[in-house]
Length: 232
Picture: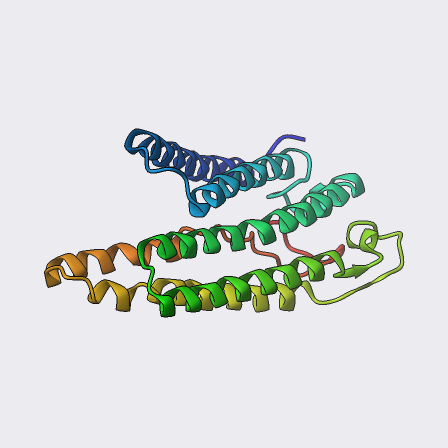
């Protein structure tokens, strides 16, 4: 089974975005080497994030080629549907590691720029909160079905909680954290001894951070083996 038209479109779009991320990281590392400024924690986390992005790209390609992503449910056999859910579960684990790595990378970058004690304490607590939440979400992902095999195997009797509620709650936290991370450097920027035009320009750059994180593919419920319109 080859990828559907929708699957090909997703692969192309994500490949371009991941490629841009890789290029950005390469330029960032080249600048560090050229200026001999050394690498910080944020640089290491950036590298880890790109590796995880490449992993998610590979999962997406497999999802579209052998998992039937983008096809109508009626066009798939039991094996393809099983692979769909296996790969989807794998991508969830990758995503739940990738998201906090990206957020903490931004915060660590702020910590290198602004070194006041109050700011460092606040961002340290923010990193702890993100790490604790992400650890809980990762564990919840591993326990969303008991036994976990019931997630992809209809022949296994098990109990699964609502995947829709799980995703909505996690994404709500991510959105809130994105805006918090966006707002964190603003007070520090306006205290800089620069012209208001420079401060405004720096504030204009910050919103781009909100849109840098990857978003988990939409899920329309967990196990709808009958009556599901399409696999997306």
